[in-house]
Image (cartoon, rainbow, N blue to C red; front, side, top):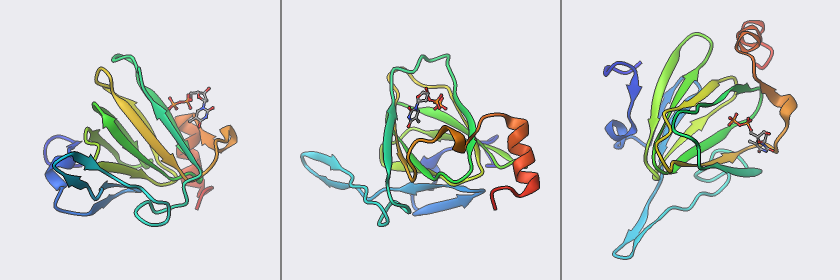
Length: 157
Ligand code: TYD
């Protein structure tokens, strides 16, 4: 947990390329910028640590709605707030941390066996997600008690 009451703000950590905390990390993307503006390129197995099989995005989320509330057995993801901000809760079954995602040049990598929730979407927030697997509902754990049990039983090690 960070010193500012649990809110992990990537702005404080931009000097580091990545920070490993539980099975997630914030990755600072390389920005190709010139006087015209900025561009970021993401390539599977290069600056994205897995082969990208799926891309999806979330937009028009109502400000009072939360999403997520699940873990994945195998899936890895990188999530980028292309516009606006949203707060992630990340939970490995023992610790629960809060990460503010609010920059298009910082990606949140989430590995397997991590419970995630998304809260506090700003108006107009747009999240893009790169995923290591195709969509498969069977691969989700959507019940928190089942998640804790899977961690305890070592189902996904
Ligand atoms: P859901 O898993 O409920 O979103 P979240 O956990 O982020 O709140 O997904 C919403 C709907 O979209 C649900 O009907 C499943 C569908 N969906 C797909 O068809 N493909 C996908 O890649 C994803 C992520 C969701």
